Amino acid sequence: MAVEFWVFTKPWRRLPLRELGALVRRLGFAGVELPVRPGFQVEPERAEADLPEAVRTLAAEGVRVGSVAAPLEERTVAAAGRAGVRLLRTMVDVPPGVGYRERLRAFRRQLEALEPALRRHGVAVGIQNHAGRYLATAAGLAQLLEGLDPERFVAVWDVAHGALGGEPLEFALDLLGPRVALVNLKNAFWRRTNGPEAEAAAFAPYWTSGRHGLASWPEVFGELARRGYAGPICLTAEYQAENEVERLAREDLAWAAQLAQAVGLAAGR
Image (tube, rainbow, N blue to C red; front, side, top):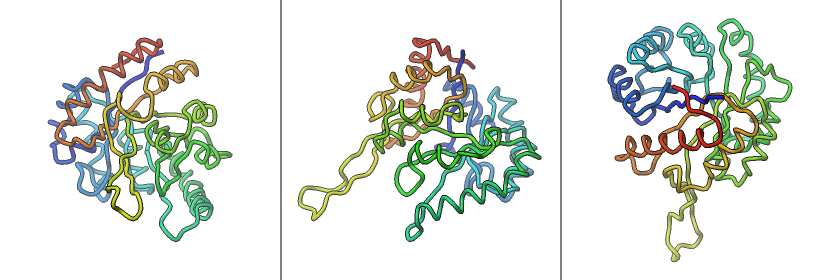
């Protein structure tokens, strides 16, 4: 088994695509998840024209676009299919004033309505757990995916968001099983954001390097190996120290590759 390491290019939104490809290659990643969002190299309104060109530009630098983080719309599905990108990642937000079950029912209807387009264009939707006002747990994600076509609707397991919510990683993988098509690898811990003189304590996630957060990366790789996972792993390059992203991403990749090698998930490129 050989996993492949990607990087989420969100930190480099202003970098021209050719330079982005060269940077990703220097850092040592095999592929990327590319944001299709306002203010990034590919914007949703121009995705049908610009995404295939972006894929070609990055391929010329030796970098594959494995997935896109994009709006859950037919035009972005069509753009991904045209560009040869087979995974579109999204999350389920739960806005204030909207009930959790109400939101999940509406999201499920949205997925079902999009299924014909996904089939036509050969694309799958990957749904990620996210701490906070989102579908946050693997348990909730497994429930959402139940009964949906496993070829078109898959799980993106984010180990850091799961750890922030206190969900044991072995529980998450038991629940999601073969529906996991992509693993998001990053790390964080809760940090208090106000002092003891405040009326009530406030906390926020602090995004850190792989060795220093709540999620145990050695345990993650051990569990992935035990279950025979051979899919891609995306390091999301999310760090509080934004001026040190490249160094931290390079160091995290080196450690992740070492952990993969130790459990028999030889890192591929």
